[in-house]
Length: 381
Image (cartoon, rainbow, N blue to C red; front, side, top):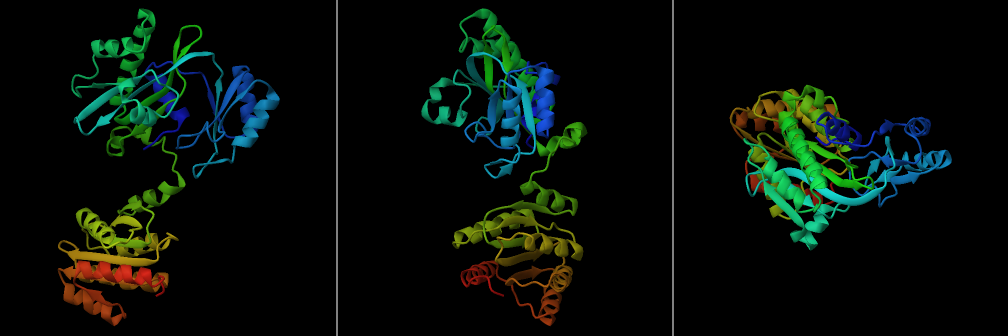
């Protein structure tokens, strides 16, 4: 789960990381009130779940009330990489002497968290890693022992020659680790970590990605979720007991079992097609799940063909067939439907489908080939 900047900064503050005393607002009037409270000049920043805000014009310095009003009006409602700006963060403007990068993430190659530190802050760290990887210090962190003081100091002295500043930066690194571990993050990033003109160190930006699988331990953090348009469907699916991830293809897939769902998507790709989603209805014999899954697929305007791939083990094929027939009748399906049905009670299941005029194959490959064929024919039922 990604957090917006204002939310990430609130967590940073909870763990002692110095951040500007900004205010999140949702209107031009709110921006003016925040600027008056903070004191001019201020920085007006778009709050969206993506990077590149500055390049898109979503971060502006305002030195007067008129500039605050103008910038807030222009940024609210702006589209940044497909995300509409509905919130602003008004931060006090500061004089920056130097910008650095500090981040902690999971390194699957090393099998542990890593601290990353670079003197090249304020830019995309991916670009730094690609063009000048030697400018990034990577420190593996023992997940049990945690980030140690000597590790933080060593990393800090690589970017600061002055002891006082290096010690301040090392403290921030340790606090960032506390936040990363304490909140079960998969990423905690400060870019930039700024050295201000007066010598202080402050996190001017913040990015946190929380591990969804650990949110049950943090109900307060789970409440911070701000669903984005592309997440709403996944959340609705989860409420109905379905596992759904939207993709950008045209072949809607409904499968029982995560492993089979992955294999189905791989097969579709292997045959030259593009799956529109990952959708696992699970292993239960519940016809309502099939109905809910069908409605979910039909809500995607990019879906041209529906491929249902069921291998009945715990799941009974006749229950899936019953749900499918009801779903087709209820939704008045006008898309091509390809069904592969095999396993427990498959004869009964295929009989139910045949009575409703729905053909089913027992071959997964044949089903995928038929789905691609229907898609190439233009998706007409």
